[in-house]
Amino acid sequence: MIKSNLLFTLTILFIGSIFYSCQKDHIDSEFPYEAEIIGKSLDCGDFEIKATKGTQRVRSITGANSGNLYTAKNLPENLKTEGLKIKLNIREIKNIELTPCTTLGVPYPWLFITKADEF
Image 1 (cartoon, rainbow, N blue to C red):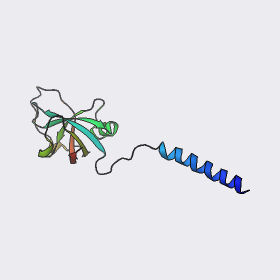
Image 2: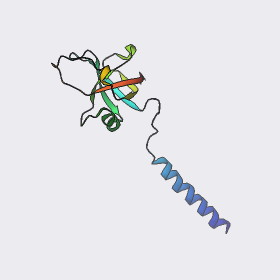
Image 3: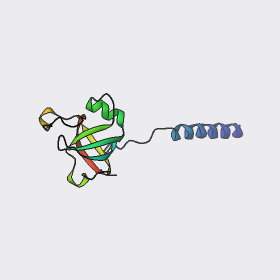
């Protein structure tokens, strides 16, 4: 009886550890997205970023159909370095926050950075 209980307990622990190890990576609630700074937009004057983590959710927030490049409003000054990898939180941009653009460059969807830090 003790042997069968021990075997049952070990089996449950083994199966539980398999399910636990198969869970998706933890999503940081403060910085759920990651991106790389592409550079300053010649068109709008704001910086362009390439989303690298959470891309589907970023598309959902921005209404973009495809692609991972965005014009970022409210990027902190200390993060305006081409090639820098950042972690960030975003929201949909409001019309009043949009900057006029020359329409000479590629029009990327806009996003508003609520919080960001170096990765």
